[in-house]
Length: 76
Image 1: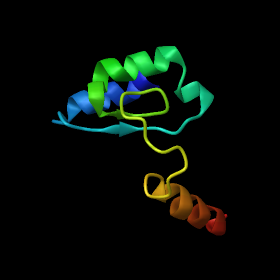
Image 2: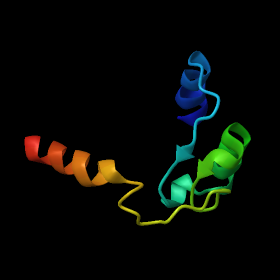
Image 3: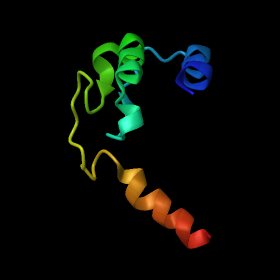
Image 4: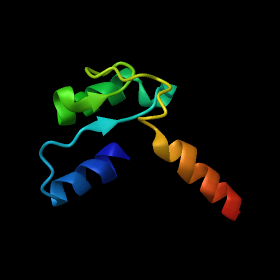
């Protein structure tokens, strides 16, 4: 997904100083995934084992989780 979609999309747009954040799911924090993201984003990676170690359960960083999923579930 990262190699086939995310990075090509970023290359299509002029995005140089983008920060990338992800949650602490095991598949997201695998060594291969973190290494790939570090290569692309450097110090602008917020992840469990990334250079920017963000708070794991911060409502400020995951605001869509608290709004979007509830709203989507209410529509279904």
